[in-house]
Structure formats: C-alpha cells, structure tokens
Image 1 (cartoon, rainbow, N blue to C red):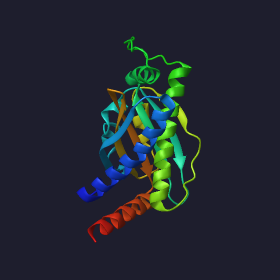
Image 2: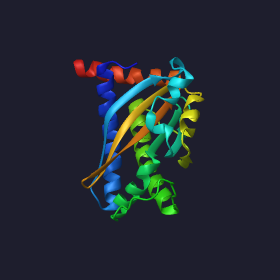
Image 3: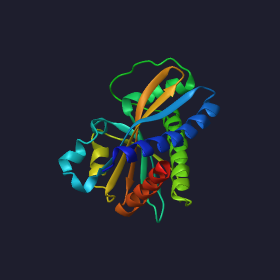
Image 4: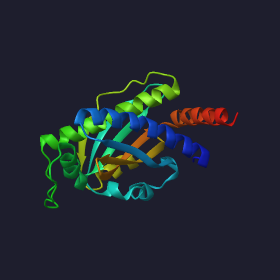
Length: 210
C-alpha cells in the first residue's frame, strides 16, 4: 500500500518517535538504550483472508506480552507494543543489569516482569502518540495502556477479528548497552485515519521535492 518514498518517510518519522522514547528510557534506567525501526509495512486487513491474517506475522502465533492502548476520535485506532514471551525474562534482566538464566519453556512471569514491560511499552507508545499528534497537527486522546499476556495464537485471532481495516507494522530493534532484542509495534487504523496519515506523508514528500 505504500510507495518506496512513503515508506522511507514513515520509517524516518517513526525512528524519530522511538528515538525520543530511547532517550527517556536511558535516563530512567541509567543505561544506553537504543530503539530503531528497521522495517515498516502498511497492510490492508480487509484484503487478506482469515488464514492469511493468522500467518501474517509468525511470531504472533506464539505466546506474546502486549502493551496496548486505544487512541483518538477523528484520527483513531489501536496501538500494541509486543514482545515474544521467550524474550520477556531476557529484557527484564537487561534492564536490571542482571545475568539472564535460561528457564523452562513454560512461561512464568512475576510482577517485576510485567512492570518493566509495561513501563517500556508505555513510554514507547506515548512517544509515538505524541509524534503522530504533532504530525497530524492535533492532540490525540488515548486511554491508559494495558498489559496483556496472550497465549499461543490468541493475538492473531484478535487481529483477524479487528474492526480496523488497516495495519501499520513496525519491527522494533530494542538495544540495551551491547545487547539487542526485537519487538513489534502494531498500529491498527480505520480507513479514514490511514488516508489522513498518507495525506500528511505526501505533504512531506512534496515539501522535500520543492
């Protein structure tokens, strides 16, 4: 759905948004935090069959922990920041400066794990909401982020039944000092909202070419 130019502009914008989040997290954790968006895709969910939706993002077929929020009135949708469950303990250890110990395949999380992932997701999503609000030249209203543990395949079923028609998929590289893990940001938009977003991107493209 995106031209190469639109994709480059969006990638650059979202790298700026998550860069702001990285600065905040670095101050809080007193560690060098790196966040980047190496890949971005805009997909039309209505054009995909149910089976295609469920296999759209393979990592979502496993157990995942998501930080989610709904946003907007005129410009509206839902944003999810997602870590695969097998990386949660690793992320917690990185943030606390502790040694990571590989545990059993059965995922068991404590309040500390949830709190750290919620704080990371909260800061990243808030930075993105602020950035998108500035881009759209409006103040976005959004609810308090919620942390949800989704069992294997559950999130894909939620995605397949989504009312929003478009999905912006951001692959996020999350680095702490010299270690790195990969997460996902999924932003679901109504058709009107994604058209508004592309309109703003096209305006930036025209300004760059003048």
